[in-house]
Length: 339
Image 1 (cartoon, rainbow, N blue to C red):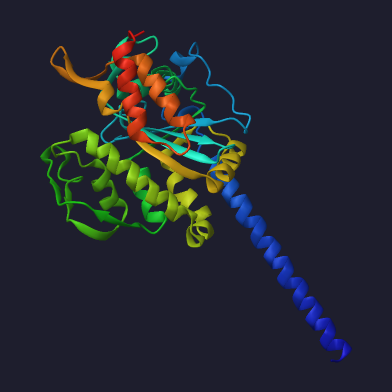
Image 2: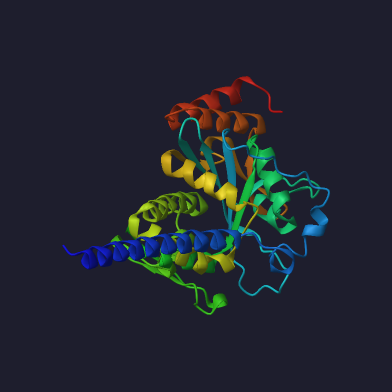
């Protein structure tokens, strides 16, 4: 090989190396900007009108990165609302990550659970978010007996964009699902067939919204947890990771959170190394009863103390035996008085 040829080869290698570095920097910067845009400020925040009323509300606890962390996920239907109006949450989940045990627990909170809303009396838990995110976090924290450090808030459009951005999900729909709503101008009608199929954003939303069967919201929260697991797994694949800057750009307008970019990096690291150990409904069936407040149907917790014990046992067990945990909760119900 001549000296000239060697020089060309060296410069070609250098240019390729520099291009790789440049692309890597662009990728990192794009991800950082995408994550940073999740936290909305001032009038860009969906809670701009209610944040002033939350000045006296207790701030969420800080997360150092080594202890368990709990994140409240809230999905809402924001259609037809005026700017500044906050809708009730259509779905509520707590994702609990333990960096030491490398475990993840997902808790779906039934939206009609009747509980104390700090400073606002008793009401369904899905109304807590209308008073602001800190109120919602405190409400869930007091109900479950665990600290809630972070929240993530999104609406239907954000969910649709996320599923489409990751390329959809392959999922088994366990039965035919049909529902029509003239009030919504049939925009969010549900029409799904039983069987294995590829769900895009709109059909995935139909699946997680369906509750027109015998078990209503009980079966719906189960479907939401199961589909969320599939979306998380889809996010872990190589294609989704490469498309991450585009995914973040697509969903950003529909998300608000108190997570900093640094918190998100730490959570991503913990989450990628962890395994989902449980995926449960809260309150469990044996710790709730259907009742009425006035003419409104609500779900009452039969024992606040034993619900907290149930959640504690659930999060501390690894792996979780759900049947034994529920039986323990029932035994405690019989031998203790509620507090």
